Length: 190
Image (cartoon, rainbow, N blue to C red; front, side, top):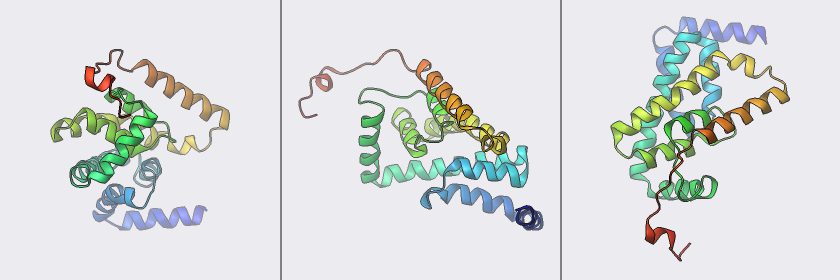
């Protein structure tokens, strides 16, 4: 394992300026090959170091958010599928705040694109969506880049406690008020 790791570091160091560019592009297109973003953030921290790994991962996830935004506009089937999934998991009349999305992204079993969709529903303008997405990605990238190598060493009890803690914090940061239009409340179609 040490030989493979050493070889990977040599390839990255000899890669020059295009190694970070390839990493950022991999971050953008990793969603099409079903690789979790946490794995890529951990790899970025291990390969490039903590600070460059954080910067490259934030750039890559921002690029992925741009791609996600424009795909939502172009593919209505994907929009409808994520909308049904959100209604089933989060609730029909619930919207997640940016702080909730940031905390829920730290839980590895929660679908990353579903959380992006929750931001998309809340912030439909491009500038607002990108700002909210960037803020929601900061804790995720920092946590998985810095503590990525230690997360794998946690025992199952510590991992379970962390996930419960993140879920409780997300619940505490929820919106306390929900406005439901009269027609939606008495909608007989659903």
